[in-house]
Length: 95
Image 1 (tube, one colour):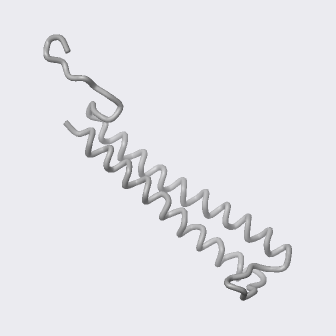
Image 2: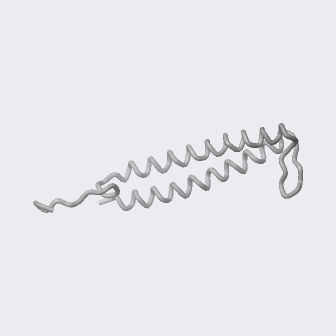
Image 3: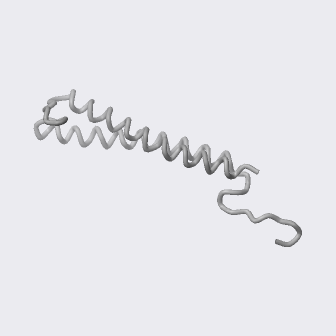
């Protein structure tokens, strides 16, 4: 590079704050989306008779909240993986 300039790619360039905030946003959005999808899926299953867990039928709103909670935990784990990925990108972008 002429005049001693460094190459600046997507990761490099001092954008650590951008990567960090993007990771937290993805975590929040994934928890919310998974919770809403879990609620809608379990509500539809409740309308058709109930939700089964390993052969045990859970009827009514109890089954809906079980599935919603499980989906929220799954959303948290999904978002946490992305948060770790964006944290690594944040650490890589520091000069």
